[in-house]
Length: 392
Ligand code: NZQ
Ligand code: ZN
Image 1 (cartoon, helix red, strand yellow):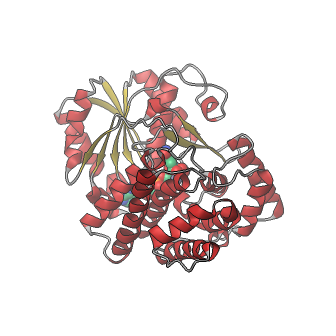
Image 2 (image 1 turned 90 degrees about the vertical axis):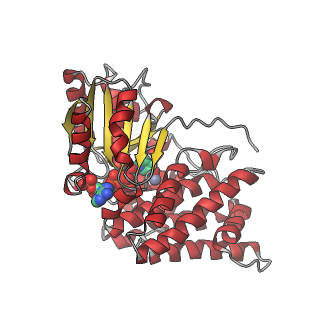
Image 3 (image 1 turned 60 degrees about the horizontal axis):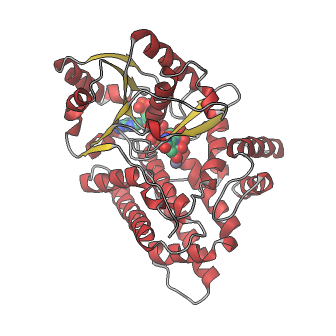
């Protein structure tokens, strides 16, 4: 097992009705004025925002609001939030929503505590000295931002999607009530299953040595998501299945499933981010469309892991031919993606992927990753191009 440094400071409050604890969690954070940050309307329609506001008012917690975060959250709204936070003396940001809202909240948290352009962080030109604290009421099990150190923002100027990671924005608390995810459209629920699995798979496909416990956690997490995803396709209001998936979502991206792996892969994510930055597709769907191509491309550099994945996650029988078993694991993963309504090709999105577009995507990806990315196999610009082509 490789050395590792695992930091997961987020206070998790999990279960039915737990959003009612938001005021006491904020009170214990000793904040004076909260920025209540949310998305494009779902929290208004479901009544969650109204509940949170009443709870804050009853507890005499001063707050201002900023809604309007869209999926693949935009830098322009982050700037608006920073202005607002600075001018109104905000000292805590409460994100009510999914990964997009949380990531926007994290970006505002950096910007409100800085005297430089927050995009400089995402552009690797600066590092932050501090950030405002962030709390979360989660409404979708997917990105794992409620426990992660990352924030992914899209700069509309050029359609550039960039992530920035720093432990200082790991949320102080996250309220996870699986019931809140029951209003999700099926497609978003399925994007969530995919993203959750991918966060674990991006840490699993490495050439690390022995990591028996971490592998066991990762494989159990994947089996749990697969099993409960299939239940939810038939029965979207199944609380137990929603709960299993929601908890898996947080554990899949708080670093637990990578402890001892010697370094995460995350190539599929970085390749996908350029797609959702340019074409504004849902992140989880983009991952499903790319993963199979990435897997076949890197397979021979990471064969034992792919075989282990096939055997322990998909129960593929060992024929004695390692490559055949590994390929069957990849095929079963793609069949699963199809069965939950996810694309397995970029063609399914309906945009045209010309050679010029592939050049642009690969160039942006190369810049975003600083030249190379990957642990299963280290990938460079030419590899990105081949994978984009294979996935189309
Ligand atoms: O905006 P509203 O109206 O709230 O609608 C949202 C949005 O359209 C809707 N939704 C959320 N909860 C709902 C609901 N609709 C009905 N009922 C509910 N309970 O779902 C749509 C998607 O929401 P979004 O927040 O975009 O989803 P997700 O959590 O998948 O976040 C995706 C973003 O996170 C980034 C992705 O790149 C993408 O930008 N990621 C962030 C990561 C991180 N910070 O650690 C890691 C991930 O790998 C990922 O890159
Ligand atoms: Zn993701």
